[in-house]
Image 1 (tube, rainbow, N blue to C red):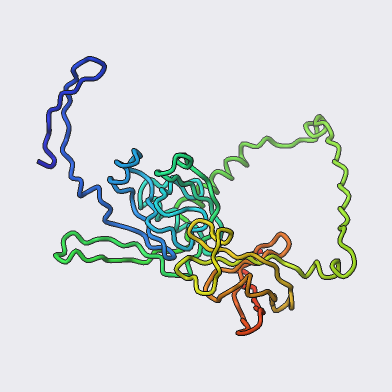
Image 2: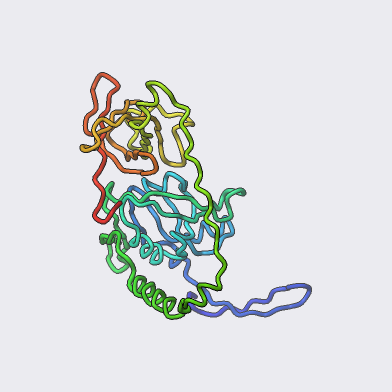
Length: 308
């Protein structure tokens, strides 16, 4: 009966309406492809979820949030867009992921079908962490008798074709459309008074703390729940599917990028570490962890080529 027509008569508003519907195969609506990214599993919205929660069959279902999305997006959520790009299906989701470089923050629009408060799209910022596992796209082979899965690696940090060229063309068009500045036109423009410079705020920190303050930094440690080995977990440490620890550090050597912190802030080696130096956020890794005392030495990761 799949693919054939069925005549149906319904009553709408007191009137008889006859329609003809095509019988579809529900097995085709079951996801046969998924993306594995940093211990997260993502695939198209299954029809069971759409039917239960009354949502359309579009978007990316979060079977497991993993390391990248677990900070803000919980499992069973539906991703709607990445960096403003709609993700109606797995192909669009894959294309959007390929444009995001590793260790860069990006925006994600998502909704939680089973929540009355979060059924509308919510916006969050998450960090791309490709180095925790190989980013793969898996597909089920329907021809094979064993129904085996095949995978392929996804490219990382590459722009989609045509994006850069369109930006250059738009820049040229804007330059051509801009009116030429003549001396008369410049003279006719009213002069804008320069705003007075704000006085620098004086720090109220005095004494020894004022001398140490430039060497202090904020340290953030996070990991997924399955990597929890030495964490004392409570409600304050958990955000979504991720576990967090926050504390302070002292810069030991600027040139070598060495920072001293404690094991309450960085309790184990397995996790992602960020160091906030003023207004600059840098990734770091554990160089040395004392087995007895609460001492941890971090090394700030070097900037990528072209980074600032």
